[in-house]
Length: 332
Image (tube, rainbow, N blue to C red; front, top):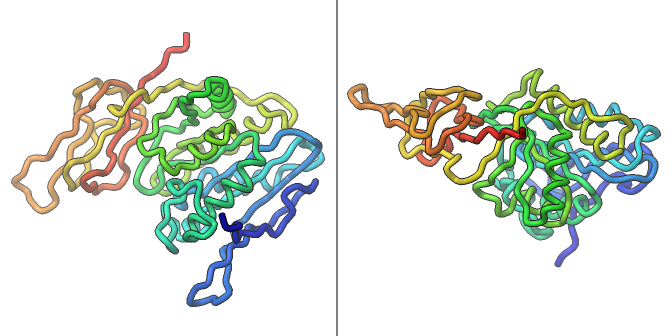
């Protein structure tokens, strides 16, 4: 396979604090020999484990971007045992455009792993991260929220894995992140995901959904910042114990958790995030835009539980995810 065209402008293995870029050549109309310059920070102290922390996998999700930019300025190489690699804008073109996918090639970075060194811009980013950064890591924390089209209860998540020792390590890291909610998460489209690539390499992986609507709140950013430090303390990269508060356990056991619109129109939620809902209860109504004499279509819950995610914009299209219902888990 061809060699990656991405070149780091900083050393990845040297001790100290290094701020720089991953330079990806990209010839375009306004810059014949131009580059995509993806910001990266590497902070290495005494020998120890490595944490790879990423945000901006989707460009319209902000909690992780904000948390990692502050963390990059706060960490002291002399105070850590190990290494922290931070990519606060992993899909930089999407971050700059405030879009889920890249405006260059419409690539959804989180569906293109492990990427290709001779592919599109987004595929080249995925390939470099998968082949050069993930192998260096012991743990990967990838921040997400709902972007412009979804809103979530703030949770950290781990996945059910075939390797139960790896699964247990992921769940322990998720619990250390200590979001207000902790989810054993089911993915409806796992092919090409960063999650799948990282877990396939045998690494500990934690992800999040910390809000949505294409913005961040003071609360959601605080959760992201606390979670990053908790993870580093959990790994022993930072001294101290994670700051642990209450967290509610959730599970997404099957595809009935997901609810999709079959008609387009005005979206009327009938329950709010955090509300309990019974199987068969009304979840939302969708009103036709062009008529006043037509009844709305009604979406009913396919299972009982708690509403953890909902469609955010006021208009919905056929096929849009309009709600996710998860189960509460009683750990007692």
